[in-house]
Each structure stands twice: as C-alpha cells, then as structure tokens.
Amino acid sequence: MEFVFLAYPSPPELQVLFFLGVSLVYILIIGGNVFIVVAIHTEARLHTAMYYFLGSLSGIELCYTAVVVPHILTNILQSEKTITLLGCATQMIFFIGLGSADCFLLAAMAYDRYVAICSPLQYPLTVTLTLCVHLVVASVVIGLFLSIQLVAFIFSLPFCRARTIEHFFCDVPPVMRLVCTNSHIHEQAVLVAATLAIAMPFFFIATSYAFIVAAVLKIHSAAGRHRAFSTCSSHLSVVLLQYGCCAFMYLRPNSSYYPKQDQFISLVYTLGTPLLNPLIYTLRNREMKGTLGRVLARNCLSQNN
Image (cartoon, rainbow, N blue to C red; front, side, top):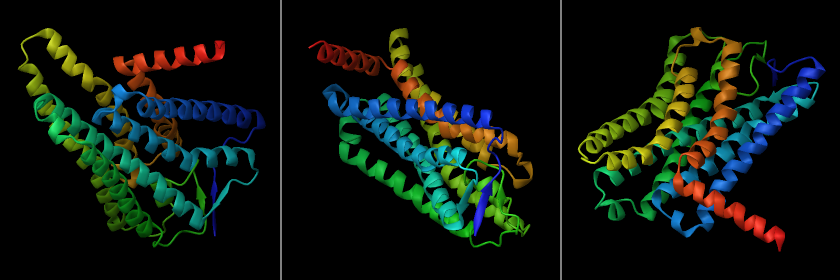
C-alpha cells in the first residue's frame, strides 16, 4: 500500500542540482522566519498585535515547510521515491491544515489593519493580546479540522491500481487523479473545502481593504495617506502571493490539472512564499529593518569582544 512519486529528476546531475537548490532555499526559509520570531520575542517595541500575528505566521510557515521539504530532500537521495498510504494521508492533513491556517491568519491580520486604520482610538481596547491568541489558535484549529475532513473523504474513495503520483509530495490535485470513480460529487466536495479555506478568508480580506481604502482616502495629508498605506503594503503583497497560488491550485476542476505546470506552482507556494514573506516584511517595514540592524550590530559587538 504505497504511492510512488514520479516528478523527481532521473539523471544524477539534475538530482544533485535539485537537492542543492531545495536545501539552500530551505536554509534561507528557516533563517528568515526564525529571525522574525526571535526579533519579535526579544524586541520590546515589537510586542504589539501586528507583530504577534507576524511572528505566528512565521511559526506556522516553519511547520508548514517542515511537513514536506525534508521529505522532498530525502526522496531525492533515495532510489525508490515512495510513501505509505498512511504517510501520504498524514502529510496531506498537516500540509493542507497548516496552509489553510496561513490563509485564516492572513484574514486575522487584515482585521488587525482594519481596526488600526479605521478605528485607531478603539484599537488598544479591541485588538488585545487575548484576542490575538484566540485568533491564531482558531486559525490553526479550523485549518486542521477542515483538512482532516477533506483527507478522510479523499482516502475513503477507491484508488486505481497504478498508484503513481506525478508530484513531489502528497497534495490534493495529484492524489485525486488516482481516484477510480469519476463522480462530480467528489470534485464538488473538494471545491467546497477549498472555498471555505481560501475564498471565504480572501473575501473577508477584500472587504477589510475596501473599508481601509475608503478611510485612507478621507485623510487630507499626503504623508498621512502614505503612512497608512505603507502599514498595509507588506501584508497585501503576501496575500496576493499566497492566495494567487492557492486559488490556482485548488479552486479549479480536476480536468484542468497539468502535472508539469502544477509541480512548478506547488514549489512556488511551498518554497517561494515562505522564503519571500520574511523578505517582504523585513525590507518593507521600517521597524523590522531597524531591528535587523540592531541584531546584526549586537552580534558584531559580541564577536569583537
């Protein structure tokens, strides 16, 4: 009862290049996200709701990549690139669950920006640390709950004998291609789960930003408008990157699945998004850039001493 992955390159030279490339990106992902978590924990000026959400996002993305990237690296080095049925289901539960938690957390961050810009006087009373903790926990719990339901449904379906997955890891579109029944009900069930995890949070984010834009346009000074928009630009960049890839992968019918194209897109949201998020938030945020400078300065001083 095993699945065989077919997406990995066969020539040894390509395997070495693929291994080195994925390893380098994974090291950068770990370094960037760990820096954000540590910086937010150690810097007192970053102990606010916005940075608590950002630290939680980095923590989730560390777990999210840990579900699949070490498995990809191990498979590159092995001659038989297989996974057990139970292992595939477990990988899908955590990969989809943590990916969904990412989407819900980005929606919570949009709410944080909405309150900060549209009701600044009420912000300290509304967005408390307790509320932040509840929103982060709810994002993870709801994401894993939806994922367990979806994976249990998929693995209750009959699979064909040829258990070969044209992918690097267990994901919904390639695994659904192995299901022998061609009922549209199964496809609709997957689309419903994807809509709950992707489309609904995105609609909430879009609504929040509609109110934010309306509030910012009422600000008379150009400097005030620029300052308000700059607090949202990093979050909006991450939202477009994350939701664009997820919508392309999951909010479409099975008939439009193209293995090579989808393998590339899956690497973008598995490796690219967790890599770019720390860069976007560090380079486009004045306080994070200041924190980076102070951390590097402290390290230089400690090495000199």
